[in-house]
Length: 451
Image (cartoon, rainbow, N blue to C red; front, side):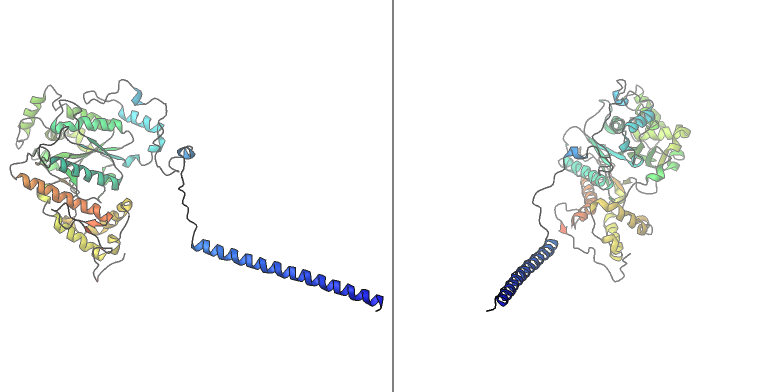
């Protein structure tokens, strides 16, 4: 064989083998690359539709957000900050006692808020509800249970509307008993809560029966006190029942401090306590007992010093700031049915929702309640004349009427709360039986509105 040809053939075969080797290597590489890419794509889609669960809880150390603005970090107010700057709390002359007046309270409160700026936002609408009962167990066998439920009712209302609650069961002054016991508590609450604009006293035997209704604070912006009352009964009839201060709202300000001081000094701490009883009895012919009482004392101040007090006290009569239970106990069933009729027509009113956003639905309902007139839910039902703890009661009705009425009112109110949790009592006199609420409750009618 020609050596040159042999060399050519060998060279050609070597090149052919070389090309074949690299060609196969390239093909193999492409194959594995494509397979890898396909695997990645499959894994990506699988991860998207089936996220990898995280079985480890995530913890945020409290100090990690310590430098954040408390509003930005979602807490609203800074509960951990109390600067060293001196405030009225550092004044040794400051006293919580009802017998020692407080001066320049507006200035002191303003100074405290300056050092606690996170409380400034929303301060104008901040409320502390104050209530209480006796220091000892009840004589009435069902008294303690009723007091527990009456307190639960107030806690439920405040949870929905963002009020703080202070429950007291001690006499803060040994002489200020019975209906006078509230004044040392209210004054102490004002000093303990400079961040609050309003202190709301609610008697233990009063309960919320419209859990959605929110106080129209804007209406009271030019007043320092709100109480249920009628001017014509004060100034024309001079009646002992022209107002009822078992429930009242008082602004946390110097004017209120002065009022409480003057008001309390017509009570048992005064040397003229018996004299004040005689004065009240002579002025209010329908007053049934000789002792000075807080209600007659406030009416007396309004009547005798109208220029000083009347423009500052809002006598609320446009809704049941508190209503007499005898007049209201029979309306609960009809009111419930009419609310259900309204909801059957309006899908948005019966929509399930979180309890925390109840105020939005209450505001929407108000648009429809304007047409309802007198059958709106009474805001507060007051069991005046019934004493659940002692078991005493007005002789016009028997004790069972009182206690059954309380149970009915409490269940009527509690149904409004339970519905947020998916249950209802079908019988307002039966506190032990509940039924689950169907998803679309109440069932709509053909004329339903979806607005």
